[in-house]
Amino acid sequence: MKRGPELNYNQKLTYKSEWWRYFGEYQYCVDLLFKSITAGEITVVALPLAFLIRHTLELGYKMNLIELEKVSDLKAKIEYKGKSAHRIDNLHFEFENQMKAIFKKYNADKDVVKQFNKLNSKLTSLKKLIHKLDELSYAFRYPVKNDGVTPNFDKKAIEDKTDVINFKEIKELYDDSILLIKFSTDVVNDIIEKHEKK
Image (cartoon, rainbow, N blue to C red; front, side):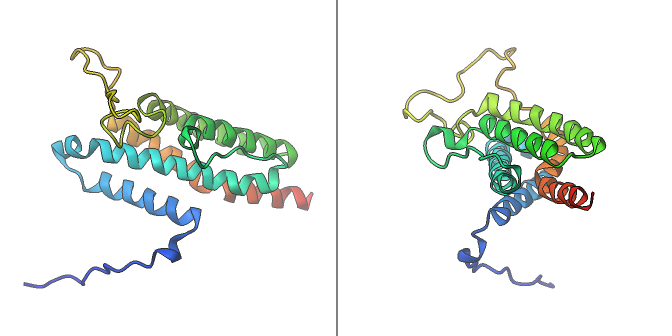
């Protein structure tokens, strides 16, 4: 029997300390999980997968905000501790503000703004779905809220769909949204270069 190459089990973590690397590894993990699950397996990985998607968004927002504020003349509000540190609704708001400031400052082409708005509508929808179910980044990780007692998801009637997550819908929104998060700084760089050539 032919064996594949040995896995590289030893990983030097100090080489992984950049925001883009964290984002990239979480994104890769989400993609890998979606590609590898079959049939009913989604049932047994729903919570970890939902958390990985949520955390990938959070890392992507923060990664972008750190870079975008350097060229927007607008300080981004990024929390690193407390409940606010994981609120993707706040991070999304900051991301939109940064992009709008950059579009205005550098007179971005209308087609670029239109494409941003199209992808951002998908990102907004994904953010709303995830945020509704897991506002503070507890619900997908723990069975109880941070008080240690209150369930994150109350038992509801079978016909109540407020706590249902549709991974087909999530995957479609995620695939479009991740493009915006992953390439926003590249687009901003192009906008700035075109502005400076005028």
